[in-house]
Image (cartoon, rainbow, N blue to C red):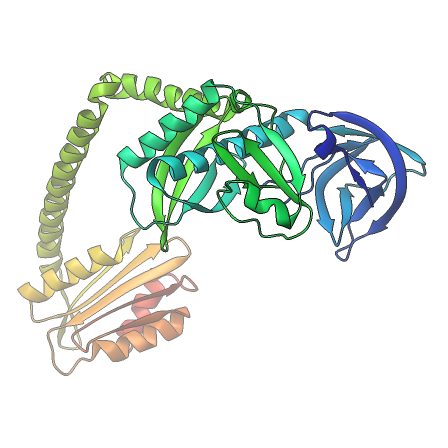
Length: 395
């Protein structure tokens, strides 16, 4: 069995060991099995370490049936001795986030009695799910303040292997899910919890904890947070946004909310005015169209071919023409590789639904409606003019 150096010293970055074997996984990936490893395999909500074995990239590490697999981008060259190197910035980040999760979970438990039921360590943010259905900002701020207080106290973080029989000697926040090889992560006087992850030597190395958001997740509350260097990264990103918005809105941060609300209100007013203006223009256009009818086989027919007009526009125009005339209206719009069309009739003996069925057959499209007004669209397998000619042949 591979010796787990990351439990002996979580600060080991480089190590030398012997290659036991290398094999292909069930999905064809190469992996190495080593006598010793400092690479932490994924587990307990913490992603695996990455790094290198000799010159090979280690892209993932997992433990299956007690065997630690180091997945590589290619097989190692024949070599008995292997030099491993951990991607330290990633390991340190994981240690900060994981220890921060323990501290924040203990803070929620201590300040409000809320227990953590799951943990996720993502690439940019982390989250815990609390066993409650509602939470207040005050609850979150109390827990955050307590967590950062414990970080400032720089309390040592200890790990200890115990048996199942020894569990009763510790005030555990949560009962471990395993019965053998139980590893406790202990923040004396504050948190005692079973965990197989990597952690720094003291709470101070978690850096800082900042809660970003919270939301309902089924019957739980999911709290999103960051720790350590990620707090600085989040602060930088948000500060850059604030700087840009200060110029765009011509307002300092405390006044930005009101400035944005004013912009939205003005935009809504302008949108309404534009919609009214567009409707007026369409009414005017429909009036002009209604006067340009042609006499085709004794019928008043208003026909027009457009370019890049929406279905809503075509429908508005058709209805406007029908209100002004007892006519048949045929409107077609050429929209790139598509055709859209609306047909209407004030004549009971002219069924536009049947004409629509013919049009969609010609254009490999879809459509429907009523005998008095139908709409549809299809592919531009023929021009708008050609489609119009075919429709008129049906009269």
